[in-house]
Length: 561
Image (tube, rainbow, N blue to C red; front, side, top):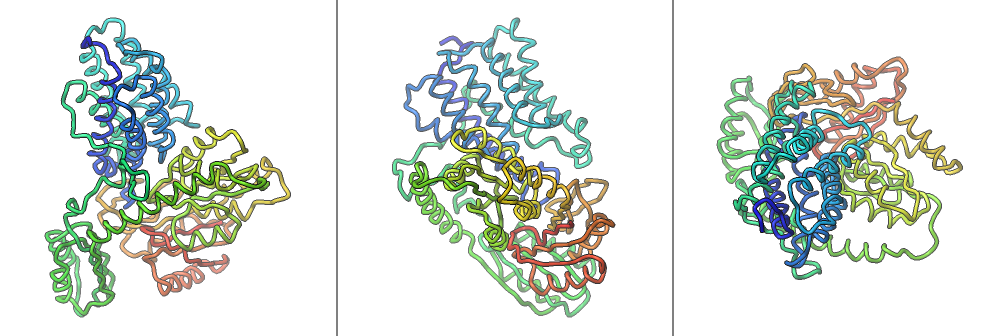
């Protein structure tokens, strides 16, 4: 084989190496998310997307040709696509493989043409393409490939120039998106794409990584995805998730707080420390919970002490996931050809938290997909849910702006029913959309009314920061409490209730009528009742209602209508 030609075997090695390199850099890419929230997930979404394709590629026979490889890469990534970054990555693969599948070998002109088609396909998949993102990086490399395709004689040099152009475009993304510049980061999706292509180029140069994407021999309960097996218990550095509250018996000034944080960081990681006038709440992963407790006792008595062995939990989680995957495969097999007549209308909602799920069930949602902020569901999850609903018209409520693309991608893949994606970007919008639904109206009339109603919903999500940054003109420090609105950070502080009040002052206007509070799994009923009392006092002209949401990570989710 000529050094300037890529055959099927080389293409296979390059793709798997790109997937592995992305997996290795996943956490770094997650940290590039602009908002310093605990659920930054661009790297995770892109990794799960490409792993879906990598599994299918790995399962192909050794002599598989480019056409078979193209179908596995395109189909696997499309079905496994998660989040906006994952969907765009899958569309880049889709366009690229459509161009190359008819060839037995790839040369520079074919690769350049395939890059052009990849970018064209990805841009078409996004309703409002935004520059300064993964799309910009992909387009810059495509344009460079088209520019040098005719004079390039060495494929290795061709790749080097394309990668250099991509890196330069990535470094320019903060100039195109001010929010990136303010946060001091490059676009995380663009970084993920560069990780894939650098891995591909390493394989071309013979610098392959240790690849482990083999499809398990058993197709039964022991089968787990590559994504679920990516962490072993040996890789858990600090084994005990330790939580406790200190009832302060002496002052806890800022200097003491810094010393406490420094000590706990020296014996563990994943530290969250929130101090109030009378109490200090601590969460830390450590191998020595007793040392953390002893440090806390220096300041007062302890309560609500909790220790979880994460290594045991991880093993149990893997086993449970294997069982769930096997059960899901059985359900999918039976749902592939549902029996009985279709219902007229059906509903799918993405949800997170026990309370939120109960609310959606009560509003008539047929199928719930666990996901949302902490784990964006895949296109394949959407397709399975659509089959399960078995209706002529299927309404999907993504309830997250990072899930809408995957929902639309599923819609495009379905031909035997009418799929309607309601553009809900938050859970409260999804709840409002279901309330607005009228069974006597057509799908077209309902989508119009539902869209109008969700436009009137303002959402506030309250969580903590995982790093120091500056965004929306606000200085944010690790463990600060943040209230995130529809268009950015509304308030930052050290107390959940104070931050919520500040955020509501920025959102409530003369047309507001209702404030809804959904407390998370880490925000107690007592705190919620106190918060509702404060809101009723602060906004006496508005109705205030509270519901148990049960969502992780977010202390409270609020809506103003």
